[in-house]
Image (cartoon, rainbow, N blue to C red; front, side, top):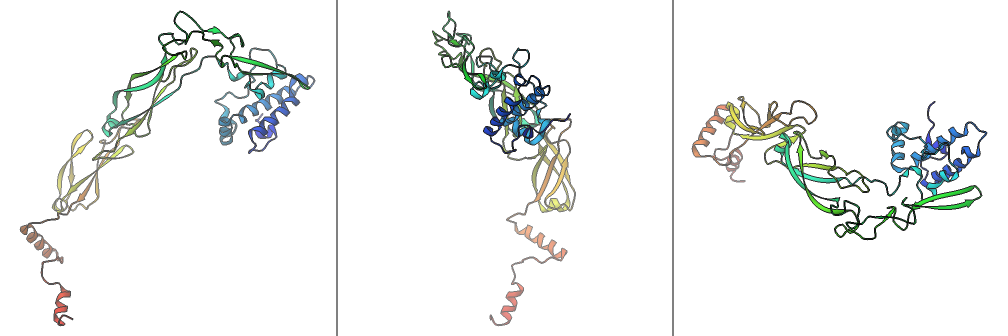
Length: 377
C-alpha cells in the first residue's frame, strides 16, 4: 500500500509553520492513540502514520529533503518506527508528549551518553605539479584531545566524578503534570549537572574539568594524483576527541591549487602558449616545449596560423576517478618584432614586393602626392 502524503496525513498545507505541524500532531495523537481506542483495530496504524509524518515534518532537514524527493528521501533514515525504549506495546500519554515539554522524545538519546567529536577542516594550498602527481605531506592542526592527566574524566587524579544526586546519573529531570487528558511527564536537561549525569568535586588542573586539552598535532596526508581546487580528502579519526567515550571526529582536507606561471588547467587538460616568429610559422619548425613531466617536442608545419593548437596526448592531469590522463595543448602565437635592422627591413620589403603587398617605404603616400599636385590645398 502506497504511503500517503505526510502533509495530507496531518491535514496541513505544505507551507505550514512548525507550530501548526505540532498542533496538528497533538490533536491527531490524542484522537488515534491506541490507549484510548482499544476497540478500534485501525487506531494503531493511524497513530503510527501520524507519528511518521510528524517525525519528518518537524525536522527541518528531513522536511526539506521530503519536499524535494518525497518518501524516497526517508529510506536512509529508517523513518516510521516508533521507539518503544525497551517497553512492550504503546506507553501512556506521557510517552507521546515528552517532546512538547522539552524532553525531545525517548529517541533523542541521553545527554550524558557517548558523543562523537567534532569534525575539523584544513585548507591546503598545493602546486599544479602536486595536483598532477599526488603529494605526501604533513600538516599541523590544532584540536581538542582527551586529557592525559585525567584520562578524559575531568576529575583530579585519584578522584572520580560523583553521580549527580538530583538526576541519579541520568542527566535528565522529569516534570509531571496532571491534566484533563491524563498524566503528562516531560523530560528536560538536569539543571544541577547540565546533562552530564555526574558532578566533579575536584577538577583536573590540566583540563579544568572539561576532560579535553587543546593540542597541535602533525598529521600525514596523502593526496592522490588528479585532485583539483575544491577536492576534499577525509582522514578518518583525526578530528576532535569525543566525550563520554564517544568516537573521534574526522578531518577534512580541502584542496586549493595555486595558479601556475606557465600552464592553465582546464579539467584534466593543460594549456600552454608558445610564441613563434613569422618565419617559423611560414616555413615550419620543430619546438621544444615544457610539460608537467619534463620536455617534449612539437612539430609546427609550414603555413601555421596564430592561435593554432597542437595536442600532446597523455601529458595532462591524471583522471582522479579512473584510468588514463588528460592532454596538453600547445597554442602557438605569432610574435611580431617591434624593431628590425636595416637588412631585415630590406628583405621584408623584397618579400612584400614579390607577394604583391603594399607596405610603407618611407616615401610620400598617395594622398600626400595628390595634395602636392593641387598646390597644397
